[in-house]
Amino acid sequence: MSSAAWHRLFSVGLLLLAASVPLSKSASNVLLVLLGAAVPLRALRDLEFRAAARRCLRQPLTVALSLYCLVAYAGIAHTTSAAEGFSVANKFVSMPALYLLVSLLLQADPDEGARSRRAISLLLSFLAGLTALNLIGVATFLGLLGGEPFALPLAPLHLHHIWYSNLNALGLYTAAALLLFARRGATAVRNLFLGLFLPLSAACILLSTSRTAWVSVALTAAVLAAVLIRSKKAVVLVVLLALLGAAAAYRFVPLVRDRVDQATGDIALYGENKKAESSVGGRILMWRAALRLYSWHPYVGVGTGDFERSMKVLRRSRLVPAYLLKFNQPHNMYLFAMATNGTAGLAALLYIFYRALRTAVPLLRADGEGRLFGLLAVAAVVHFMIAGCFDSFFNIQVLRYAFILIMGVCLRGGAGGAGAPRQCPPR
Image (cartoon, rainbow, N blue to C red):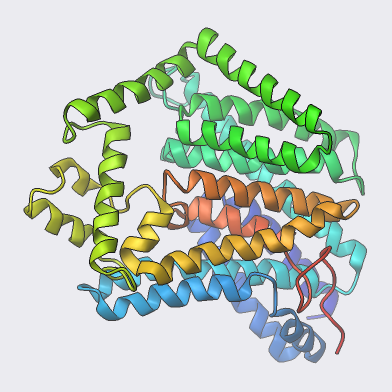
């Protein structure tokens, strides 16, 4: 197979993978395995590609993502059930695998213009898949695909409504970044697609009724405004307008008012009876339980895959209510890392965010696609850091794949990994 044919094969495969991430766990897994197998096959038969691939392995997040996996696997050594430990740790292998696959196949292309076009095409393909999911969601909401019409929360294809809303949040940032900074190859059709995607995605986030997504999008937007807007007065004005918009939404949108009032009601119920079942109260109890597990083993945690078993131990001691046993994670990615892998797990998790922000922030000073990639990467990282306080996002495939796909597109380069995305260094 010629070099051009390999490039076409990888391009089509990556586009299908990006589109399948929001739509199908099975399809994205199969495509990841097939593409992952095709890379060493080409490397064996193509000396030039093998040399380029070897030079491209040192991507900005390679060490951070690999370290996160290694800590998870090391935690199996002192877990009660090795099978459960491997079940959890194996999830995280896809993170460095997908990141290296996307970044390597983009950067190994010798044509700089082609690299930028393919990177933007990957983001558009991801949005196309998410648009299809959102249209299914709208049809489901209207009762066109069966079920009761206007039922909430919106969760198409049985995707959990919290995962669905936060997936759409990543889509919002992607579409906004493309509209603002993707000048090369921009067409009226593409801009129309992006312009239509934004209100559709925002409506789906609203109908998902996920307070995690609502709060995270608002805070991420505030962070981006503070970073991008140089005038302090303008930043203050934006914040005031955002607060006014939030107050108006609470006053005039019953859905928003009901969800906010439910949170305050949950907190009041927790104050009256700490073991009463509620969304917010349950999270508080799980956070306290995770901190208790961390205090037992502060350095290495209770072991990868041992969270549920440890919760049963707490239940037998009457330290947590029975309804918490149906959760396999404490709805907080930081506390989950601390409980299962101790300080080592928390450090490995924070190192991913640190490396990503350290690589992405300089891109905000670049021009064109560089700024696009920087803005999108910062938005995705900040959103995950905020929303991760309320859910363990790296345990959820659709969110894990979407996040890593964006990182692979946006944060790639040579050995240094700083500055605008560039081709791998020469031999």
